[in-house]
Length: 323
Image (cartoon, rainbow, N blue to C red; front, side, top):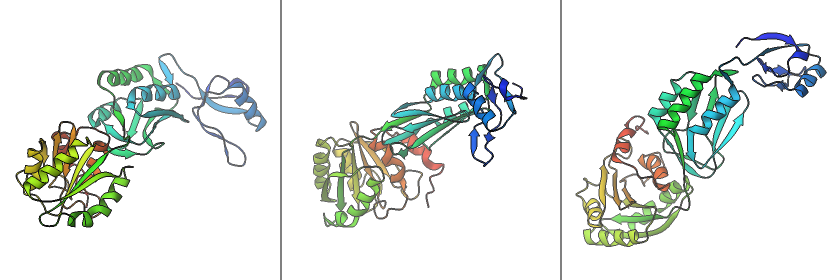
């Protein structure tokens, strides 16, 4: 692809190489635009006689089409694709969702010449209408073989991105304290509600219990029977591990422990278990403040009904120092 200066009258059907501005400084036509007959008349009406243009050669595809084709293969879920000027295409959340990103695949795609893809971080909450990813093609044209290489990888291993919707989550909360059942509720209820509001959620049902093993088991079983999206355990004490009162009660209530401890600070004493497909989360110390902690990393995917694995929690160490 070569740029050349041509008479405006001959510019129709060619690609504009540089942005054209009006005399007042306002943009008239953006670079990368395929010039139409009406654009020619517009340029002439502004007194322009020459413009820099280029044409697609054999084996090339225009920047706008290339960006749209990549965007069409990039993601799945509650997404909309919106073209943007200059060889760009944006992926926008169609509803409140959790953004899941295959980081290794994204790196592989960005190693292929011809386009650059940027996304929100993995497990990020995105509100309806928010941009979650952007595709930018190489200026003016992309070699067809490069585009086909990107598309082939995406079709074989994709998608890179999922927008997993958060729809009417049911959040169950168990407040616990060694002596007073209502102490934890009084201490943590306000912070609990503020943190959930960040993800468009609220407390649907709650119980308070002393940290007596049988009392905890009964309370957990009662909450689990409601089939909530997630059960959050807010304790005034820090557990010694899965064998402490809360961990023991989770196991007795039928939970399989997925992970104890997370490489995140604050929040290293995380305890995550599953009763069938319902996650039960204990994060001691994390309900005392609205400051960032491990819950801000985990609540979004859990509210989107995504099953977090111990391996994924282990990967949170890179960037896990939150204060």
